[in-house]
Image (cartoon, rainbow, N blue to C red; front, side, top):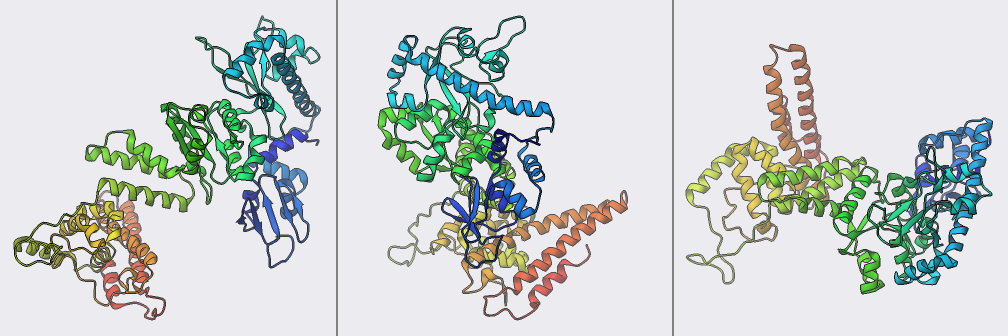
Length: 629
């Protein structure tokens, strides 16, 4: 089967080589490339490199070299066509059928490049002719230099329905239609798609013209300002980025790529010295375009106009990217001042203004938080709950488990700081003796302290509850991180509610080492005797201790929910004995898993002292957990 060079180029452009190789070979980032010990020969020092921009791997030891198809043949042992078919399946492409018609189609695609090249030459010639005087004046008024006009291949399509067809009469009319240059309508002569417009060529990664974009000279009602070629055998607007053939080499020099909204934005930035800019084809960024951007830079900068449409475009890009996120790859967001596009900003404030914006982009997570936080009023508890639901909807779209977990944690921390703000403490003068410069801590009134102690006495008989609350007292900076879980715990265990309120109200003071206005004496529990929870052991690693504390909070909140579910399953025995029994066994199994995990956590000591198999205090809790309900 003969595969055309054009089809193979398209296949390679849709495959990210490092992603393919990382399925079987561990790669490490090394600047703009990846490196590893060569999978084709034994070595101790990495000499195998992968370059996504150039689309090949190379070993400086054994000289192995090739692209995606070579990798599938050499590493997987596939035949050429088997390798092509597997890659094509992943890339969403159909392998051309082995018949004369497929060969003719491949030949036609090759000749369509000739059609587009001839059309580009004709458009440029029209701009330089007497017909293009007004267009040249228009481009001058837009502030475009002659160098940029020539560099980007500006042309002109006369306002004549038949002029292009006559000029390209050496090609079949059907080819001009297939290339998107003519529009064919039943019972009418085919006529020019582009008329009375400034023309710009759209090129592939090899610099070949595959489509055109045209802009009208004067805004007219009912006429689109910009018009692009339709999808053709050469042009798929969802898989193409304008200016990618110039921006690719430029991005490798500055380790950055800028995605803007339109091709005139690209040209304005290029004239200002930013040569690493690309643009989608008048639509929101697609998954394929995001992959193209990631081949040029790990964190492309997406720049949107400073208007409502720009904000919506930013969120569409974020929503399209979230499911695709992978370690080291994301988007950075720059939003221009209100009512401005890149051309406006550069003309008004100079290139340095753009540089300042590019130097401090917003993260994808920051964009999501800012957008959802400002999307609706947040005046009531219901409004704030709606904010949390919207944030978690975005988190649920993320497929990578580690990234999903980190986004959830960061967004909930921001939400907690907003929904449960830390209260500022202002010491007030107290009666009696006090230290100069610092108010004496206000003790709780006797009836309040007694009530809290009684509540604590009942609740703190449970070792896990006692440990968690003591851990939060030890790490008060974690209180607001777990505010949502603690409030759920308060709902399920009213005895603990007042203690949780105390922690939420005074976490900031406890973290700063200050005495709260109401002393914790008699309210917060002492740590459990002989406990070996990491977050209660002196000298434990703070990071590990906080992670263990987070897990303990999660388990503490889950246990009441399991008890309630087991009780509900027990009540269903009369009507659904089999289903109720299965549900009860599943829930009890989960309770046992929590108990076992508690045992593991309680056995965990500082690295120098893990010796006992099962501490007695945890054994008591585990026995408690395994009692029949």
